[in-house]
Length: 479
Length: 119
Ligand code: SF4
Ligand code: SF4
Image (cartoon, rainbow over all chains, first blue to last red; front, side, top):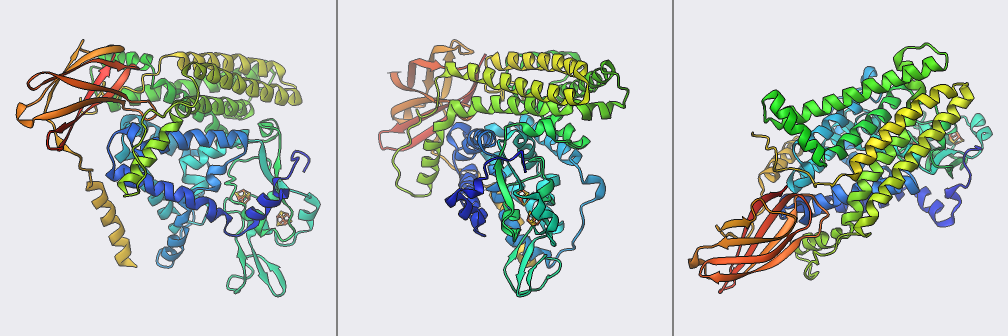
């Protein structure tokens, strides 16, 4: 495939490791152990967010390292996701439970978009970032949901249609500099079993798909659980980097190739639901950062006086609805306008689908800028919190040094965030104009660009405000 | 199998009930000067029951958000039961959890948390 350059699977050690059938388990195990430590400290450790392994590891390190990994390599956190270790127990449970198929109407991203919005509301309302105990419950909830969905529905359903975190990773990894693809598409044309998606069993008569040989007692290699067909992959969307396809292909024809970061924004055609995912992630990311600055509290106070209520649920919900509604409405309107100036008349949804890919670089920059701030201000704090949690477990590790925190001087943070936002805007502009040039709609791209410029300016303004590290005490849910 | 399916949620419910136990409660009265506190140095006075016979008292400030370096200051006893720290520096606006960590002459530990917002 021309868009993929160097194949990382050709690297001697990495290639051998990823072809090994237990490689994913080897990646999942360390994250499972960290999750268990987070559960232990979250439930039994000190209930103070900066001094608890659950809150520090989940809200600083997991999120920070996730965007870093996506930016420099790919969706590595889905590859090493410990949630899928429920697979052993779910295989057992499947024997006793009815097997359902995921409803056709939900085979898109709308359900997961709704879940993501609910999750982000819960994050603010219950101050999940400030509570080790709730953070531990969130981890339990994730494992529980993965278990239930995986036990009742076909494998891959949870990752593709339910997991907000996975879909967040999918959306961000559209920026990544690597992607799965076929080494030689000609080989795929001749491939009889399409094993990368159907799975492979090595029978004495040769390779068969899992369906063709359901009971054969021979090495079995599952195919792609999210049903991606390797020679047709043009995007990282829905790819968990599980490398099942690499192991299932009997012709060693799967590549993990390098590509230009963000190249897929220019070439891929996303479905409507995927475009919505990108748009909403941008506006939700903005809201997530906006919730940390004084302007949010002034707005909440003003709304509180206007509505005559101190209910945080109502105030937060109203601000969320207002912002998301305004964002969606404006974005649709601007997309229609862009179509009109380039001589097209289409339905608003179609216009959004045409122009919506430009929100992916913006969403990536928004979240990366925000998470980079938290990660860089507190990255070294993982050392004392891990030390303290292990001390509780009885390991003699000495006294934690609580002065460990920042990775870079504080005055570097804003310039770094500005650089990330500019990069996002540059990516969005390139995407817009490259696609528009192909379709002869450059005037329309200029309209969208002007809108994105306003959004980027607003984002920079939010990031420039003093971060208040949240007002958990200002608005109590009971008031 | 059914037993496991029942046991797991029960164990999870038990976990939900587990809240960690810490040192004994200090039961002190804490005052900030100025109140509400400001960015920079602040005076914190702590009034403790003299029966507790404290030998040391440390004031530790953490933000409610993970990732910030805590602020620490030793308090000194200015009169029986009255402790004070002059140089407690709030480094950021926002919500803080002030932890009073004390020890008495027999080595028994006490702790108290106070939540405060630096506007
Ligand atoms: S990647 Fe391998 S298994 Fe998939 S279609 Fe091509 S040759 Fe067949
Ligand atoms: S099997 Fe599917 S999800 Fe896994 S790496 Fe291959 S294409 Fe991606």
